[in-house]
Image (tube, rainbow, N blue to C red; front, side, top):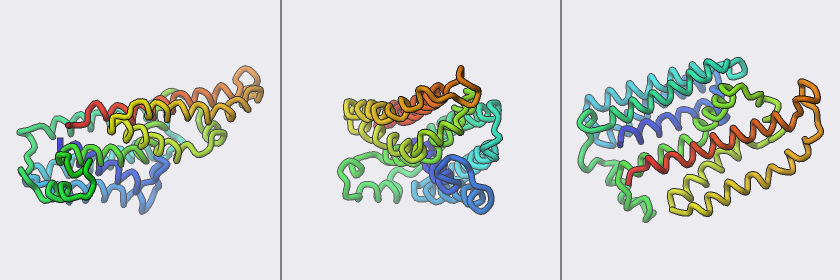
Length: 256
């Protein structure tokens, strides 16, 4: 499970370098993202006591994942539903591959590596008492809840054929509110506060209702039958459900 945490942390950090919005920025940021996807697993793998073979394979797998993941998402305004679906399936297949790779005895890490000792000395009781596997997994999920999750939400909307470019302009702040909402839900769920997490989900609907209600009688680009409120509501529902799933599902996988 250490390998999965390292992979998630590397993917999340690389996507943050590429761009918080989930749309990779061409040029130095893309190069920096790919470099991050190679350097981070190598450095953290060494700190986690990975053997030479494990370190090489983990770094290679993570670097390839980042490179292909970014290439599949290039030219965000021209991504087709088929390419969006291919990107999502590729990321899912990569996660499955690293999960299999991370299982013993395929991958091997030291019994008490430097990073584990560092985690135990942190001044936070919740983290200090956690295993290295749990600490890395939680850190990896928290990192991917920002740019990576934004990218996944956008790809799901594209794959579903949702016209979300205008909807994004109507419901401003989604690229910032979404990550904060996911972090709150995941953090509360991790702390066992399921009721509080549900309140966060309910609060979003209440806060967005006035905006949706204001679009009730506004015609959409296709004329009166396809009103703006219908497009924006579809965008909000699909985007929100995907976002909540990204925050809640990792709770099932988190190691003890």
